[in-house]
Image 1 (tube, one colour):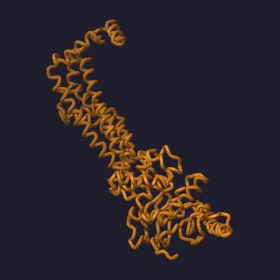
Image 2 (image 1 turned 180 degrees about the vertical axis):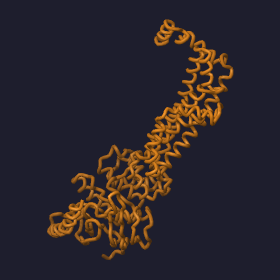
Image 3 (image 1 turned 180 degrees about the horizontal axis):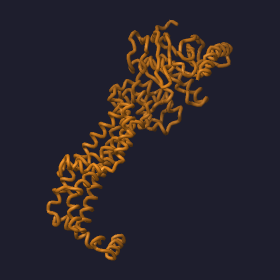
Image 4 (image 1 turned 135 degrees about the vertical axis):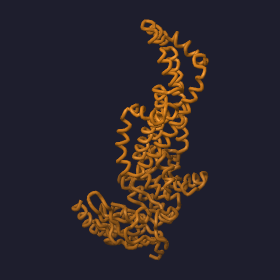
Length: 237
Length: 260
């Protein structure tokens, strides 16, 4: 309550259009949630959620796949790791215009951008995780007759679990950012396009309300990620 | 003497390519180990003892020669016949002591309840009763190595390979672990090949000691130790044997030192 009051006072001292006070933001939020401001809000949210799911699924498949292929071959992995790290360090948004050219203004370019952002931390986490596993454990497992699959499931995965899960969570957060930023930068649908729309029309109260809705979406995705994490832990023991 | 040959190492050789050129680890090594024997391999650092053990365990393939166990040539790890204990116990940190002991049985597809029973029954003789649910980080070095030995015993292979298993332990723990291992060996009737640097360990435990030369590793001599257990280190025949063994090893250790 104190924080809300401070926010109200501060906003009124400044420009209420720029610093939206709660007295404006809360009714706007109510109208947004009641589907009065944007009757098709749910469709937009649903589209964004599907884009995120697709981007993340691709990022996990690609990141885990590439990570294990490179990590399984010492020389190749060592050669590629710095290149991957360098690509990861480039502000990914520089790729976005070309993604729009390739994939158009619809969902595909958002999925591609979310994938691009999520892919690198997952790949790098897999590479780091593989290096983390004590090679002696693999020797021991082999001496007990472990197949390649058993070594993978019983030694490699549990040995790198924390690093891998960390990478998967970072990857999800970045896939979410990628999709929403992609929508804001140019699209006709999705919650990011609504944010851009409200911002463009200087409907700042709606804008704040939409950002709050988006925040909830991101928190939900993190809840999902931590449930994956718990499952993974149960699975390896 | 009367027992049958179980392991025949026939003229094995191994070279490794390293950054500083090829290293000849083993050259034409032949050795027969009899059923029920406690055979110790001793030699200077880098003489290929571990490589030789790795060949018996199927983890290292020889460049020449072969290893035959019970009539069948070794072509890879075979946990039904051979179990290995390493100097680094290599316990899985995410598994409890009990789950570590049960690891080999799990790989063999033994049902969960059964393998937990087998592992649990082993914890008593391992001196780990009450530590079943502890994780490796909660155990002392000696306990960790006993868990690793338990993991090897659980799969009930006839042959136990031990690669400097007590090398990282302090002297007292090491001596106690040796006494404990002797007891296990005599009760379970395993055939043991044991690699060590320690003269004392070799004399206290072995029914036979094989001395290896400095690199490239070859067999320098073989000593039979028919004395009964437990052995008093100060008894005249052991003192004599110790002097003999030391003179065999001394030259090789000197050579290894001057080369490295």
